[in-house]
Amino acid sequence: MSLVKFTTQIVESFVSRNEISPEALPALVKEIFRTLSAIAAETEAGQETPSFGTRQMVEELFQGTGRTLLPERERHLPVIPIAEAVTAENVYCLICGKATKALKSHLTRSHHLKVHEYRNRFNLPKDFPMVAPTYSKRRRELALEAGLGERPKNIRDPSIK
Image (tube, rainbow, N blue to C red; front, side, top):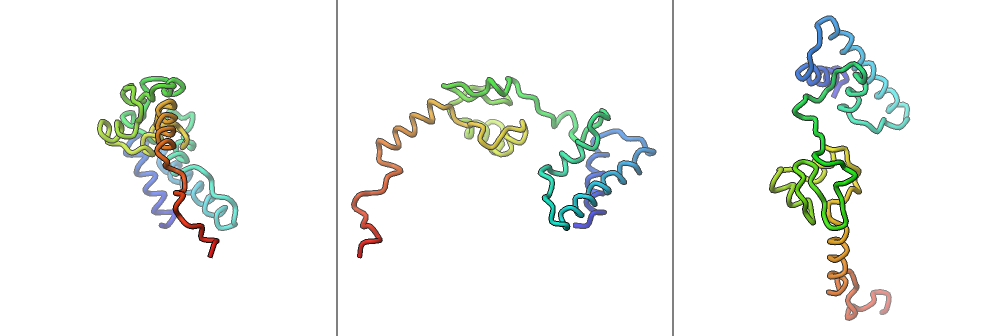
């Protein structure tokens, strides 16, 4: 995709969700195009591509201006503090506050979200637990008791001929 088309998409998305004066629009277009051009030049020169996405890039462009790429309805604040979302016995849903042992099925059924969408929504790390620690430990113990994760003893060693 060309930089012009990419710039157009970013500007269109930003303008559709934010009030911007007609006088400020050319500066917005120039700044976004300049930023994308710099990223493209760095990538072609073999330098590392920045680790942020387009949405974050535009958010950073307007940091401190009072404007944002995300409309109010798409901003998500957790109903409980993230630090309190995982206890030994439960994992609490940051959307509704429900306590569960395993969060994935609740997210799918109640909120129609996949785990990666949930993590992105609240900017959670990839290793953020979706299962309560004691529940996970107990499931692991049951699996080991059942012999899962061990190589069956009656399988011949392929190195022996």
